[in-house]
Every structure is written in C-alpha cells, then in structure tokens.
Image: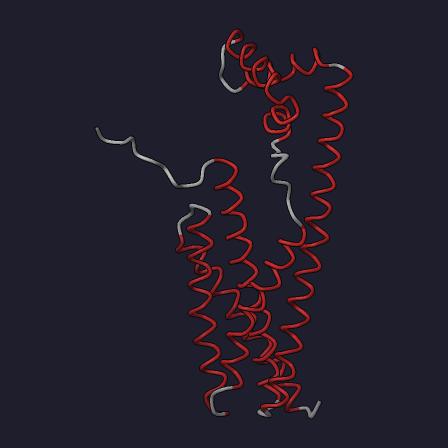
Length: 237
C-alpha cells in the first residue's frame, strides 16, 4: 500500500513571508552594489590612491549598512506596533461585543465566496476554536503567531547591504590602478543583471525590463559620479 504524497513546500503566509524576506535581501544587496560602486568610481575619477579608495569604500559600506539597518528597524518596529494595537483593539471588541464580531466574520467569509449558511457555520467554528486568530487572519490579514520582527529586518538589511557593497569595493582596490575602473564597472553590471533578474523572478514578473532598469540605473550612477570625481580631481579639489 503506497503512502500518500507529502508536501514540503511552504504555503500561504509562510511562503509570502519568505518571498518578502528574499526580495528585501536582494534589494538590500542591490542598494549596496549601486551606492558603493557610485562612491568608489567617483573617488577613482579624482585619485588613483588605493588608501583613499579603500577609506571611501569602507566608509560608504559602514554608513550605508548602518543606515539600512536603522531604517528597517524603525520601519518594522512601527509596523509591529500597529499590528499589536490592531490585535489589542480586536481582542477588546471580541470581549465587549462578541455577537457583532461573529456577524462581521460571517460577512467577511461570505464576501470571499461562501454561501451565507456555510459562512455562518465556518465563522462559528473558527470563533469557537480561536476567535482572535480567526479575526486577525480574515479581517486584519495578520498572523498573531508571526508578527514582524524589527531585529530580524535590521540584521537582514545590514548583511544584504554589506554583501552587495563588498563587490565594488574589492573590485576597485584589488586590481592594478589601470584596471580598477573597468573591472569595477563590469563586475557591478554583471551583479546588477543577477539582482535584477532575481528580484523579477521573486515577484513573478518578466526579468527583461527589470534587468534593463537595474543595469541602466547602476551605469548612470557610476557615470555621473565618475565625471564628477574627474572634474573635482582636475580642479584640484
């Protein structure tokens, strides 16, 4: 007798949360690539001194990664506070007016395509099992057991930005002086093709346009900063 097949893939909220984290990591790495590449290429337009390039690149990496981490922490903390406040309000309403909340849950389920009778029965069963969780998921779109974590978001952004920023930094300081800018530009454009393709696939979109936007934006950033650095270097600034 064969056993029924098992399914190991994530479903529902777990899959959505995983994709959101992956997308955030890809975008964080992309920001690290573009911002650090623009910085070191701009400095390379003004000087060929390896120490100056390394100092500028490390400063940009640390400032950018800390800024990303702080921004994510503040943003996700605000989101978590909002989710907790919404759950507290829902908990109070369930305690003070349970019949009205049951009717509201029935209407929400009916709006999702269930018949009135089935929606009512489902609402009754969900309420009996865990009223707060039922309302949180159906009404608020919140999983009470998986609230957003600001520390996870901060560390993920910090690490993703750092990983992305290391590429242009190393590409700029490791090769000989004459090869630094070409190696950095090629490395960055290849990396942007990858991050653009990955972000598009995670969003179930066609990658071609996303890759062109990504590469075009990165090339423009490097071009502008290189010209600016060259002009400042020529002026002796």
